[in-house]
Each structure stands twice: as C-alpha cells, then as structure tokens.
Image (cartoon, rainbow, N blue to C red; front, top):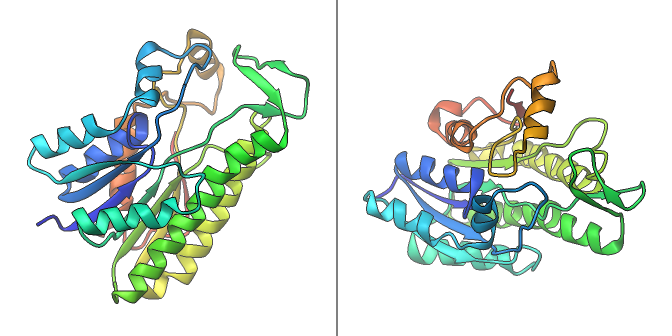
Length: 265
C-alpha cells in the first residue's frame, strides 16, 4: 500500500502533472484533479493548449503503468461543493488524504489600465466582477475550502502527519496586468500561512512555492529575452524541477519547513 494519499489540483498539465508523477514515485497514491478549459493564450504552444483542454487520465495511467495508484477526477473548483467531492473520491478509491497540493489556477489577465495587450502580446481585460470571480473562486475560495476539508477530516480521523503546499507567483507590490491573479494568490498565501500555525499541533506543515518563470508551454522568444535581461530572473525552469521541490516539502525530510513562501530562482 502507498505510504500517503495526495490530491493535486490542475494535474492534467505543467507543474500539476509533474507533481503528481513526482509524488507517485515517492510511494504516494494520487488523485489528479483537473478541469478542461479553452487555453488559447497568445504565444502558447499547441502542446500547452492541448494540455489545458485535456483530462488528467493520461497522467493517472502513467502512474498506474509504473505500478502506482492514481485516479483522475474532473472538478470545477469554482463550485464550493468540489472540495468535499474530491476528498470523498480520494478516500473511496485511494485512502485518507494527507497531502494537498493547491496548484490549479483560474488564471486571467486583467488590469486597471486600458483594454488591450500586455508587453508580451497577451490579451488583457479591465477588472470586472466576472474577471474577479473567475480568479478568486479558484485561487482563493477553492484553495481555502480544500484546506478546510483537509483539516476537518484530518482531525476527525486523529491524523498526526500532513502536508499542504500551494503555488503562487504574485509579487509583494501586486501583479500589474494580472491584478486579480495577484490579489487571489495573496489571499491563498494568507490562508496557507494561517493553516501552518493552526494545524501545527496536528503534525501538518503548510507552505507556498513561488516558482521562477516555468516553461509549461507558454514561453515565447519575448519571455526568454525578458528573463535573459533580468538580473533577478535567473532561470526558466522545467515543471519537473518545480515538482521536485513540492515533493520534498511533502516529505518527512521537510518536517521543520512550514509557514514559508519558498521562492525558487
């Protein structure tokens, strides 16, 4: 039997898929949560668009082919009921969840400036109730409800070990041209830091990972040039590199790492 059971959201592509595979290699059963969306992002590759619009069954199949245990479950995280449904599915097919990776994002580029495109040619919309809702329901509300469901079930069964990891790329000065994304991720950071303190007596650690620019298929020559010019953007990472850090934070070895935003460069 696997040592642990994990839920990984956004596990049909990029960092989420790489994290599901990395955890499976460490003897974790994995529920791969996903939502198929139209990802016609300017400059994105065909592989990126295909990954965002596909399911996570190929990821689950790769895990099971290697002798692991995994299931793929489609869930719209903007639905408040999805948190309980995902935990129910994991417990039914894999076992009690003791690792939660909040990777999914309702990403949208919105701005307080004019409608148009950003410096990388991506479409930007003015902030509206619709852009706020798309971003906050997934990055803030869903993350908090998943943490709450994790905590409730952990306490009920008398759990003594657990790991929560979220992802962010928001900056301290906000996120110009992706303002709702930056604000929603700031909320998720706050929820996760609070969980780290409140759940510490139950053996749970909680951290956020801030990856560098990561090549999940959206990297254009303009982005590579931007990174090369920047003294602070040292690497363009591969999803597998970020996933290794997440898997480490979800291990016994990271027992003393909690309530941190771990910035990767």
